[in-house]
Length: 125
Image (cartoon, rainbow, N blue to C red; front, top):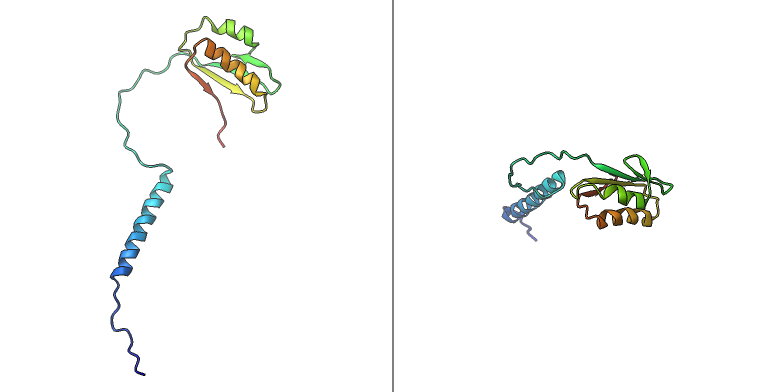
């Protein structure tokens, strides 16, 4: 038997496959590096800085409530917040081990008084 070695090799399919793989790797690596899809955001004029002081409502691990560092109850909290403007910003800081009902009581008072700027402070992992 007379076996003939390959005289030529068609590399075009090999190059095509490598280019596709290269494209996939580059696309994936840029997505992983930025952590999000790149988007060009529209421009807007700068808005005025928030001049109001953030009001802080804290719920301690023992279930005690504090408004700006002073002890409070849901009833006293409601009477204290009633005269404030509806655009007043609030920060709720609650211990993660408190009963959910304590947190809901605070949020319910804010909702009944129609406050719109409410944030819950969390810790990043």
